[in-house]
Length: 575
Image (cartoon, rainbow, N blue to C red; front, side):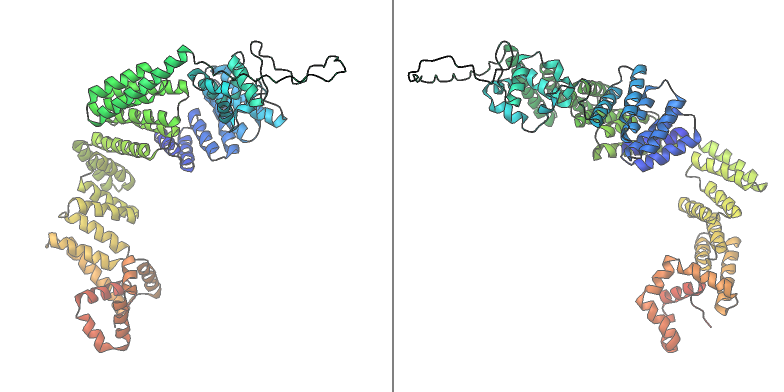
């Protein structure tokens, strides 16, 4: 039970329905209060709703229940950070990293917490370079392109990767300061010239003038400044660029072959692209798509796992990683043979949605959950056990142990949802227990499954009679008599309904009963439609003001039927 609620909570969280996720996780906690994972999940949901006080309480409970679980400290750090307590967040993330030093989420959280702590003190974060902020401005690429020297660097893949790495994490600048190109870049961005070779900043102050004769100084023709020579691209850089271009060509050829359904050729091209360039996971995901079309689901799954792993290493676009996970989930669905087999697919789709909330992925998740539920019902189907459970229910019904009987009839329905008798018997139980709406629903299901089964009509008619809906009960009994004209129970039902209707016509009911019946009738959509019908409103006026016209109206069967419904509901009285 707790696992079911947890699964619902995870699905809601993945779909961005955080309030619903909190509700399901709370249900799971009520059923399994010692499960630390449930508190952790609910803490994440609260944090997503920016309810950081509640998130902190759940995170503390997580750590209390499982002090050696690193993820609990991640939740604790996130909650503290949300509340603006950066120092406590640093302490929490640090503790988590002591338990799991390789945990990337904790490392990222610690970096954020330290940055927030430093900001609150008006200091740069620990380990940050004072030059880091110049790489964040929008004018960065414009300056590098405008300068003749750094413009050449832009053709070098390793240089571009270096700049992008610093933009993602400014603290990484210190790692690249030994690279002469980086010193040149800093000079360009700070508008300071750098000397070649020593990398020292050129002095901006003029050299001291030497003593000169009093004669007029000789004017020197200024020497023209040498044209800056473009930076030569290294052989390695040229080769890398050529390989990327070749890989792109292979990808284009693969795409063309895929559109033509020439899957083997497409695989060859995508594989060649992967060999040429291992920094673009789209080649891997494209090959996975081909394997999916070919029905090679295991190969598709392997490629998707490879794409996700490599994508994490390269810090690839989250949409690309989500695409790989979605394809993997689709392949897992294709391989599913039982309801249990759908669980990995559902989990994979949920992970994809945490990367990117794509409508197509959400639809696939819903399809997988629906298919799993249908298979569970099919796997649970067993007519023999259903008959045994129905018989057990009958025994308890005879002993007037109606709750126990309902339990066994419910199991019978689960084992065989097409067993109309189980619905009929459970409807009888609900009637005895006074649960009339539930009983009415079961009786209607019984009739739906077997319209010729007389008991279904007697169950439904009896419930409607107890609900004082005599006109509806009369219709039900009469419908049953069409299938079984000699059924005494149905005929008795018709007689009782007519007695009650006539009693209302004669005014032989108490004012309280009349008031109750009228209030109930006014809630009936059918009665509401009759009273708002312009034709029927005119008919009712004629009954009061023009008896002759009223008699003509009664010759119309449809009008007469509607008048009878109003009489049965106590809205109109015939005298």
